[in-house]
Image 1 (cartoon, rainbow, N blue to C red):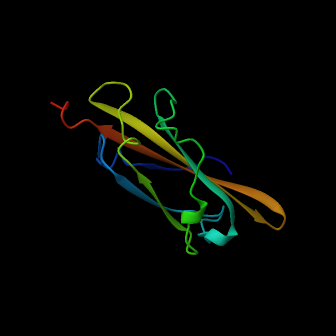
Image 2: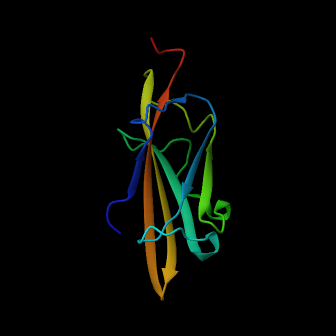
Image 3: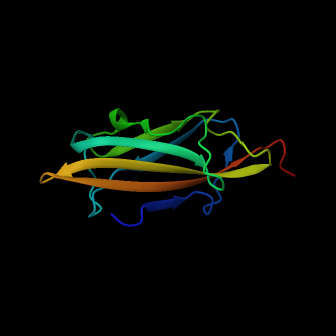
Length: 127
């Protein structure tokens, strides 16, 4: 699969408050854009990093979310307060969540990816 699907929540003006809980919904899809049922997946994981440095946030590397995918291919990731931390010390920071899923089709392993960009803001440090 080529370039992953990308969703830039920053462009939509969406900001996550540092230390708050957030839920990100998603649908896993095959290369044709059709939803994949959870039972058809071999794996589904995510990694959460600081966009500029690639530093992993809160040990969220290859976190298994396969059990959270429905038969409609819909899943949700809950980011807790430690996931929405600003590690660089500024008033805001961009984070990137990379979701990866695998499935087998006609004995061929396939891989899907989606990238979600997030902006985390410390509301007490914002002018």
